[in-house]
Amino acid sequence: MSNLEQYLETEDLHPIDLVETLAEHHDWDFDRIAEDQIAMAIEGQWRTYSITLAWSGYDETLRMVSTFEMEPPAEKLPALYDLLNRANDTCWSGAFTYWEAQKLMVFRYGLVLSGGLGAGAEQVDRMLTTAVMASERFYPAFQLVCWGDRTPEDAMQVAIAEAYGRA
Image (cartoon, rainbow, N blue to C red; front, side, top):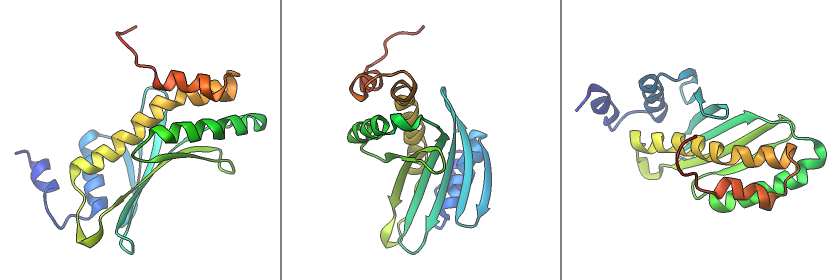
């Protein structure tokens, strides 16, 4: 067992300490904002995603917010919101929303750890992976609806189509 695995299996490990250790392990840029909050940047194929994780001891939830900038034309917002509903119907872990005032596309998820449960390294890694994978999957669809004059139905076909082979 590696030193990282031994450290991450400590039961008393604060969830944000765990995230910080994962960020160091993956060599992601991060900033420990507070004892209960960390921000990091994870590079994907389409974008670099700004991800913040915050621990709330009050409701025992590890909250993740992953964002990327997006400024769709105002007339495209109804189609974008339609697409977001369609995308969220396919996402079982987490959900998309668009924060118009901040011009940010957002993927959110909360890991409830009630009863004193601790987060495991695999759980946190899965949260982060899910956020990046969902954003990568739907990014082209968001672009097609906002700037490609495609309908939400057509754009979803891009997101749900399986790619075979390599270009």
